[in-house]
Image (tube, rainbow, N blue to C red; front, top):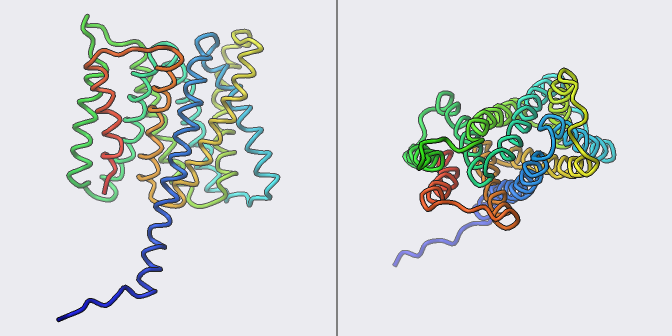
Length: 297
């Protein structure tokens, strides 16, 4: 009788080397989920009592100081001029989106606005990949239909009115998608400096808006402290996402990291006692379930 030969050491080593990056990508991505979900909850709650762009400027200052300190302390190599330009562009897109997103979270219900931004920010890079790398498989296509259904259930209203903050969440999702795409163009490099430069780009855009509006009073001392803390947590999430994208495929990193609304929704449910109608809850589950399907290979 034919006996199959046991796998060789080379085959086992190759399998391990292939699986290791996937495990690293998932680990970094899930850690980014925890960080971004927590920072979004804090930012959305704090901007109920502060100007969104002023608060986000404080967030960017706190995050920038942390990232500069870490990058300098570890003597990380500075990226090339081309990479730096793409990273700064990512920061501008992500920074504006973050301020708009905080405003959406504060004006609407976190459990409804966060999934909208997450699905769009994951779907747009997938569409771009569709044009550059070919059509996706059946699972991503089903994910698009599921996401569209989930968004409709989330945004529908029994009284005919659109839930507050949804429009801002859509704009924020587009901005986050721009962040992901620009970070991809930056290529490999020091994750610490990439996170630092994205925060610098974000600070540039939000500080410009604040200076043009000349609004420095709509924040309290407590808001400043929460802003710095939120910035540090959010920057750690960015650092973890960059590492996730560098250890595996970008679409995998984006999809896993886009699960952060689950943390935001959970915190809103626990601390703010947010409730959902049955159909909106179904829509929320559909939107979150669509995220890992959209970029599945």
